[in-house]
Length: 439
Image 1 (tube, rainbow, N blue to C red):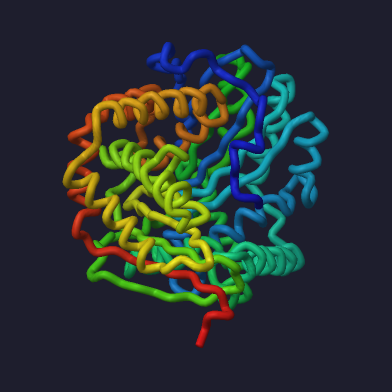
Image 2: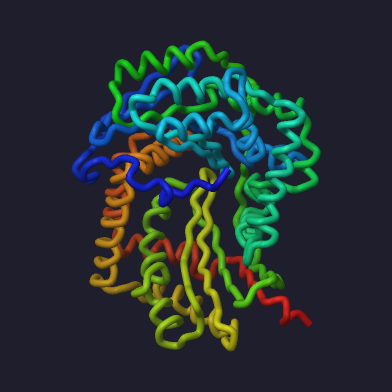
């Protein structure tokens, strides 16, 4: 399915000033089959968000079966005992809503957003495919072709399309994060119906999932409906958690890749601690100060003043067992790449050694407060955060306090994080070059 983007779900329901709601009034309960359910009522807009998060992702795949978690996401829309092929899409569309899904390294999440008077219908739709799937040979072969075509479009033929896969392969070497979520073509083609059925039985069970329901709901009535449609689904206790040992980057590594691109791209990547660590929040300040807005240090220097690059950014990927921070620059044709690399590393070192002014730090704090408050005004964002908090930690207490975690970061904490994880640390340097420069 399409990778989830909250920007595509505008005006689907908001909650009032997030900083004024602490804690959020979540209602949690377990069904007898161990399906954990989390409900949040907000009736400002007559919409509901239903998310089912399964505690399985690409890190749980075995050797020679890479890509089955993502392929299975596609198969979940191919029909079940009472739902015809692609009817999940047509049903939610007919109800005036939308549905989709996304697969990551740690989890697979399905979501439905519809007017609140159609809550029972989407509970029925989701329960039917958790309980039973139409896993025919025809459906499997069709979706193999779809996924392989997606792989070609998004990763093999897109400019810089292999960048994220190269980052994960090298930053998380010899871990369960090393392999691409979309998998390998030879593995995808080898999947059998028997293996798909076993995957569904092993991982798509109540005790390995969480149900999040937010929006214009009556709590007691919603509990009854959830019990009606999900309580009889059998648990199986067959899933196995994959051990995921994250080692540090052993040595500085440089990789050059020639691609069908017009502008070179430089990416310098470091390993960070896992999601939920203090560095998830402190390094957000670093990202904004160094590159992530037009008033950032590198943007002003490299884009505006010296005109060495077309764009510059700093990106974080925070997963359950580890994180990545990458500094990226799309370089102008006549620019020496080594010059840009030195400018970026000098900027990192300057923050680590000399820090930043109180004014610069305060400006970023104000920006982060605004950005995160705006983000959590949408119920779908609260729902997504709740899914991952539960799947990662079995604890959602941090959802209400997310903004305060950003606002409580001090300047010294940010500087210490940069010193600890970036200054003189091993890194991966990826350089993408136009094919016509290949000798």
